[in-house]
Amino acid sequence: MAGNDLLRVEDVDVSLSGRVILQDVNFRINEGEFTGLIGSNGAGKTTLLRVILGLQAAARGRVTVHGEQLTRSNRSIGYVPQKVLFEVDLPIRVRDFVALGVDGHRYGVFRRSRQTYDVVEEMLHAVEAAEFSDRRIGSLSGGEQQRVLIAHALVSKPELLLLDEPLANLDPGSVQEIIALLHSVATHQHVAILLSAHEMNPLLPVMDRVVYVANGKVASGTTDEVVRPDVLSALYGHHVDVLRVHGRVLVVAGENLDEQQAVPDHPAFVVE
Amino acid sequence: MFSSFMTNAWVSGTIIAALAGAVGFFVVMRGAAFAAHAIPNGAFAGAAGANLIGVNPLFGLVTFALVAAFGIGATSRRTKSDVVTALALVMMLALGAAFLATSTEYEPAVNALLFGEILGVSSSEILPVILLAVVCGLGLAVLYRPLLYSSISPELSTARGVNVTVIDTLFLVVVALASALAVPVVGALLTFSLTIGPPAAARLVSDRPNRALLLSVGFSLLTLWAAIASSYLSNLPIGFFVGTLSALVYLVARAWDIGRTRRFQRQLA
Image (cartoon, rainbow over all chains, first blue to last red; front, side, top):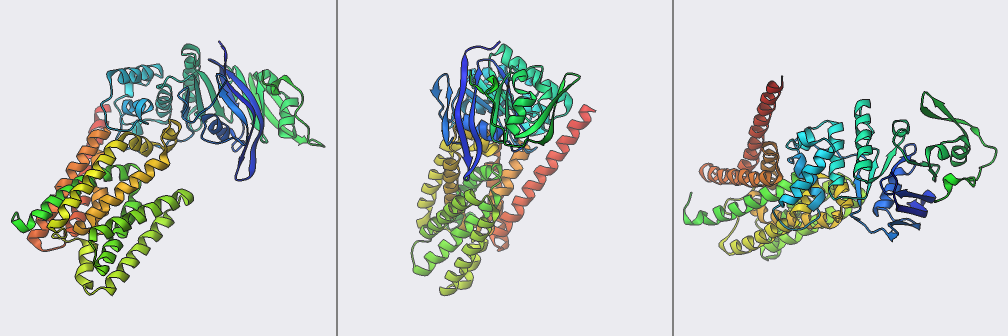
């Protein structure tokens, strides 16, 4: 399933208004890989996604795609932001909104080509949203809008899809549908997925890799390598227990460590 | 009503309405109604200042509208607050009042600039009005797609490579120029009703941006033509009719939208 090296984040530090948000971040994503970016609210997940998108400068380190330094608005990266509020009477149909992912940045008035609409239809079919392509985007449910946003991000044929908390505010049924859809995108279209979430359990069946963010630091690797008491305790600076119950993982806070424990020399912290 | 002395009113009114409909479509899409209300007040102060020092009012209108637009644009990006827009609005109104109080034609000038004057554009001003309107129209045509995209979602469009700050600034310039053209005819306090009512009605009626934009222009033209005719016949300020008819157009569109939604729900049931 996983292919060649696609994204590399190396030695990245990020500061906002003089405050260090992320420190010494290292991880990589391979082609077609499904990666969960896990962390609590305010951990710095959105900031990290913005750095990868080129919308936030890193104080140190570098981010590369296929070994080349990222530029802003890199066409090889698609993005689904955390919150997009569409007013009910916003005068745009789903198909026209998705088409903006192809030509919305271009100046001038021009007629869209048949080819553009063909790609739009293809993406709407891929995310199973073709049935509401003629409806106003603001009239759709949260789960339907999420599908449309994914189609919008995929329409420029990216190699990497970044999704910022796409499962937030969805009912459990929609959560499962969106995860299955994204897994299908990763598998069949060979698009690498980096999805941020504060709850990792829904992602466990599909995640190839996890990037765990806490306390301004990051641990990455397979779920078994990262979601362990020693690794997460070092990350949080507290003792943390990891409980596995009925196939679910629970991370439970324990007592403080006597001294701030350094991140151990564990494969999870090494960029492979 | 169609005699020669009314020609300027019809010509300038038609240009202003078409432009207000197009600009207003994006004002409503971007939720920038408050800025669209504040900027004409900058134009008001500029016209009053030009009146005081005896220069072409259009020069004062354009200059002050641009100052207001840039001021609101630059400061609101930093503070993300309506407070700056509100303060710009009252400051410009106060400045305009001071300019007019100092001049010799206080009362008629105040009435004309605040509430509109059907004969507010002289023959010598028609050509500059046409030229400025063409500049605004071309500006909107060039900006159309990134402007639409960033109006729907600044975050998505930024990630796709649209420079939202540049688009915002250029759009405010277009709003300023359109306001400078509209204030002498419709009045500073009521210009924004033309940039809000017809576009808000159009977006209820159509679900396609291109059609909604054209409908907005159409509703705006109908509103202003009806206002000119009503003002001529009743001798009341044109701004009064523009304000009330704009609201009426919106109410009719809203009623139509509610009716359509109920029919759709009945079909589903």
